[in-house]
Length: 363
Image (cartoon, rainbow, N blue to C red; front, side, top):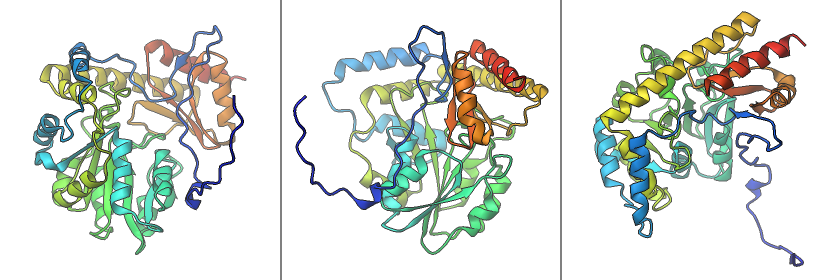
């Protein structure tokens, strides 16, 4: 290694207090069989038709992808009943969230969101000079919409609603969102982040299509990372009204949606693939119910999750519980002194989670 020269560069002051995003901990390579359930990944590999489409696209990776993603935007527009131009694509819904911040938030402007919620929110806001207004979730891990509405000021430009909420799990109802929107000024954008929508009970899932049609300040965020199993390809999108959609196209990274990602996303929209994905979603919903019921029998009182994960509100014992599980072959996601999230994964991993949770209570 050579001697490093002095760095006299000037970084933006806002970065000084900005935390780095912490990804789910990988499994240690120490000879112990471990299940990694720390990142809300799908336990299923891509559907064969999707895998084949991705592989077929690799022969053209010496060319730039279709920057307009015309075919995919057309298909998604038809799916959501909007014009293709109202679909904004990027490298996962987290990147689209970043585009929203770039399009809406100036230095000192505010973004209201629940906490604890998706860890990237305050990072995205702070990195662009915005002010993150984090409103604590309730004791049951739900959005406190009353407090969030009260937190909106003249400097608020964006509100982020994550439903089902990552990492706690509870979701918002259509009535709750409508009542909240009635208190939000029409110039403040409300982004409904539905990365985990497919795992929600279909009978009670949020009616975002109608909400979007009724409110010109609402934008919807979706991803192909979770149920579709394309987390490694990085592709997600927003459904936005025309003016905001144009703004998102101005600030997004060019060629953000790669050719393999576009091919995989397109293939995942095929009817036969959608049918298979729904079977997978139903299996995960069933496993989630089984795990939650088993944990309740042990005496755990956990938030009512509608995501592909469950959340243990362990407070100061969070890190200890995660280490306890890791030593027994299960890699979980600890969130400081708030709680621990466990992804619903392979049945063997879910069984091990139940076993470890019981052992923890019997210490």
